[in-house]
Image 1 (cartoon, one colour):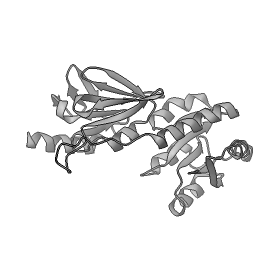
Image 2 (spheres, helix red, strand yellow):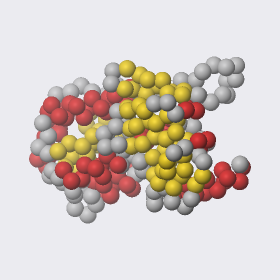
Image 3 (tube, rainbow, N blue to C red):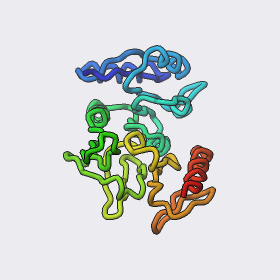
Image 4 (cartoon, rainbow, N blue to C red):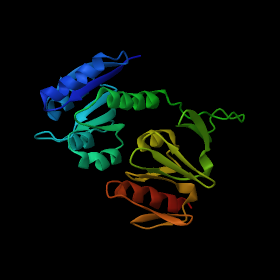
Length: 241
């Protein structure tokens, strides 16, 4: 199945370059091109897509500001002429960051990341006689294989620049996914995103304050954006305990 996309860039030439790259592929189809993010925002309401090619520096509303307005954004590939935006881009869980001028070879690598995320399997349940039982493991893609992770052993998940680190009691696993991908697949009653770069296992929590969550041997910061919800959950959790 083809992946649908929007191209959002205030430079017509930049849009033409991406269009020419997509024309060489059978896996992507363009549903619209926009020279400002406001028109794209309105179009997304009527035409949801799988992927955005999103320029960062645009008048009125930047690509980063635009992405932050989306409650359930599609996959995003940032395109920009400015390398200094790369770190913030990855912290927003984008699939990739393409520096202009965009070569077809580099473009293909970004598309391969998109396809890998689309094909990644969901957590599988272990049958133990209870059809309502929660999944207690998942498989995550690592290089060219899938690695089994026991959920009860996870301490935290951390978003790095271009990968996600899953820290368990016995090992560290690096996977070419986003932290949002992991957040959607971990049981919400036990796993809480407390920061744009961290998800913690609440069952492993040893204590907490208004600024951090204590896990065995380390402290995980609570991000400003996630603070209100995190503190609400932690207070409820403490009352249960």
